[in-house]
Image 1: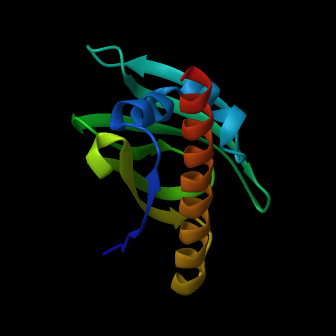
Image 2: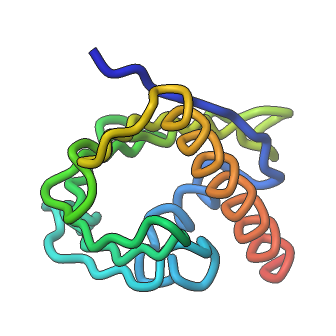
Length: 151
């Protein structure tokens, strides 16, 4: 059974402001670093992304993959791998919880990655942790700069 890696960060913005950035796939290349291209392939009945193609360049790992997204509850988005050149599994989620009177949001990112090439579990967990930390830092910077620009 695959283990997941998770980490959390507090962002100075409301959960709605944070989710707006997470859901704006067209702008991922502007703030994520590793994502060079994002294309929404399908939307659900509420207009949210249901399937997204992402082109990644994370140094040693370059991939073109498609993820299926679900929005199971307010403040939660999860995804799973549909197809990939390098990955066997890519499951993850963002969970948002209001903090500090609703003006801050605690964001928890969970990720499970399995690559098609053999890799030691310890190295894979470290790679997952780097991916999560970079994503959370990029998300925090993007949300807080967007929130301060609009206020």
